[in-house]
Length: 119
Image (cartoon, rainbow, N blue to C red; front, top):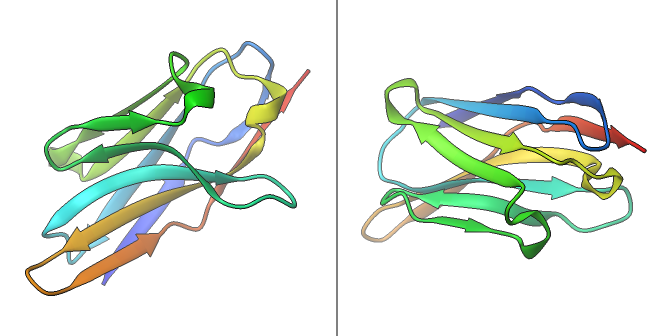
């Protein structure tokens, strides 16, 4: 089992910045990718940014140029630096971790952290 603990959410004014952190613990091996998703009220959960084991990153079009995903392997932590925040970035942000073996794969989610951007 893998546990994911997120931190760093909060209330910020439009144009401001926040950094989210997600620390993994437990059976951490065969990690294929880690990422951040978000879900606003009444909407589906969508990918915001992801980073693979080979450090390839991907971003939703809506956050390109404003958000940066990174990770610290020594700390088993992935970060999401969010800048130039907009009210439409308001959502619960979830950390995601995917493991993949030869004939198996698993996925884990954090508990979510609220990000609220005021106009």
